[in-house]
Length: 287
Ligand code: BGN
Image (cartoon, rainbow, N blue to C red; front, side, top):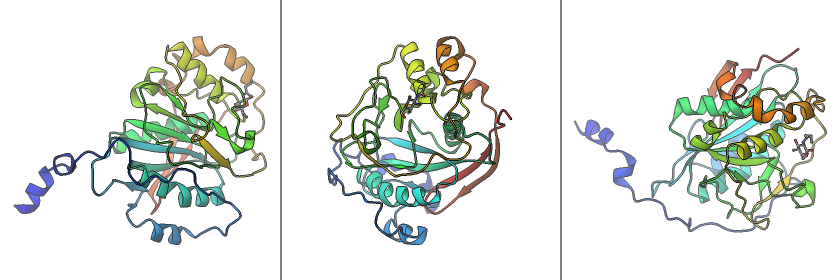
């Protein structure tokens, strides 16, 4: 009887809403990749409130934002270790109700970042009613926790000041690195394109989709929307995509038919790890 009653009480009934300004933010953060990487066990110990699958809910209040963090991935284990170590504490201080999804591309074919992001969106909404999606490169660590990962009324570009580009926006229409969209915004543009195999252009494609859908792009100022980028050589299977210029010319015509509504993939594994949900997928590459 008692457990039944407990079950029917949702968290919303019990806890007050979290404040608009989370009280424990620290502002500028000291991020370094020169320090010894921790083991996953050590990171888990330092983040005891993170649940299996890499999810978290603030214990004292109901979060204003239910957020899926989607990370396209292949063979970047060391980056992931630093990402989890730094980002879990930040996301908790931001009082988000969040879960981290690592979407791992199976095989050695051409990498397709944007298609992995579509898979992350599609798989995560099977788990929970996420309203906000952060599309996050694994090699970028936020350097100021005041850039709260809450989706505003228009798509937000977070990767504003990136150490890789001397903390300057490389060009005005840049929409790369880290972005945020609500479920509504993302479905309105039919998600990302599935057709960018290899490096480049898929983020510009999304910029064009957003513009074609008459939304504007929001940014935090560059003093808080700052990222430290981890160094890496260009990955094998991620060579420049020679077709990206052609694809980019046709976005407005193609977007209706290329995206969430044409997404095909096969889940090879979907596992709850202690610090993230690990989904390995076959993307059915062009070769
Ligand atoms: C751009 C790439 C982006 C990339 C940024 C930053 C293209 C399309 C042809 C113009 N766009 O040039 O995908 O995020 O550089 O590196 O290559």
